[in-house]
Length: 482
Image (cartoon, rainbow, N blue to C red; front, side, top):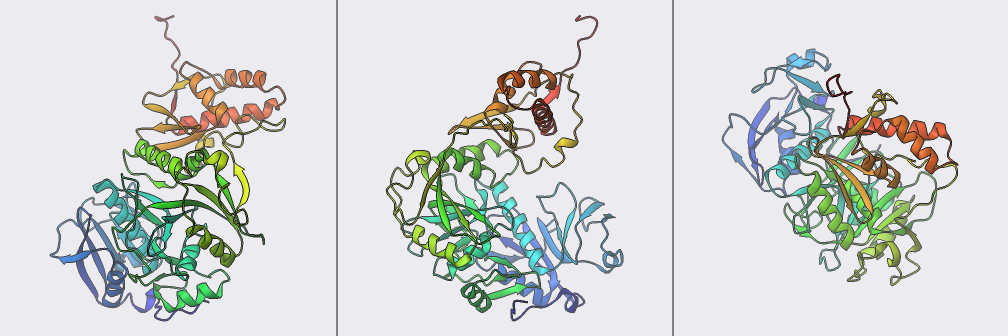
């Protein structure tokens, strides 16, 4: 196990007397209540040292509460069930398990969140605080890491990846080389296009990847944590304070490989950059279209690259060279064609992921997925009648920019990316259309594709659209209209 001094386990501290503090953080519309043993309370406040805050008198209805479980909750063996809250709704569903409880989390439709330890609890609290911050102002939030040189002359590196995609470890490894971190998981995006730090120190999961430089740097700056993960201390010279702004210099999409490979950077076209960016927004109610517009502006103006790597140190060396490069004035305007040609050829693999795609004999016209959304796992459980007519649901919007098509569900604030064929079917759904009819039309357009493959993909597309609330069944005409 990675040795970090000062780690404590929950079981050794949960029985200590708890202290209640209401804290007002800059930008939040209400107070955050902390009900924790003294040492844990000190660790929590130290974690948010770079987010301006002050102690306030007890609030009747705090915005958020982070606390340890009560004895009655402990006796329930942390099983999901109906439990009473100290205020508001009398009953709520517990999400997750563990002794650390977060109440009022706006990222949950209802209920309270439970975490296994203080480090995980602070992480969930920070996410909930940022969600409230975005809802209370004009800030939007990206799921990514941002780093820049202290002088910040060439703009910052915006690193994007999914959960456990390597953002935090790469961010801390770059910090070890002197870069300043504006966030390792959440970064604010202002209306004027600048990126905004939230004053949150990086969190590293254990075990760490192989890198002595990373291990030594993290060990010297370790703060609150447990056997699963730990935070770094929020030191002002290495972590930007809350509200610090930085212009984006490069967008880097991370692709960490499990097998050994050379670290390479590949330029992306503006359309590909848009497709990557838009699904890294933390959407708040009513912000889907705004997220698309801001993603479009950034994709069109900031060069975007994909970093493929296995070795952390090699990836860091490549990004350091990128960070020190000046950005061409028109770098983002035609990134799909010319990006990288004026940059050192030994730094980039001069491969460009363009915005066009080729149809092969084996491919389905809707492959690999016409509808791309992180919450579509249950979409294919929706029953689709191949003979039933469907049509576009009122309020759904087709948004097209930089050669990419997106559907927007205004009611649910959902974003869904489509390929060209799916776009054609969507336009046809302006009038009643059944999956069977759609399959016949695609079969005529793509005679070399297996009919069963087309039938299955059409069914899945209709199921996705129906589950997303973008289409609805067309009622059969009654006797009078007939």
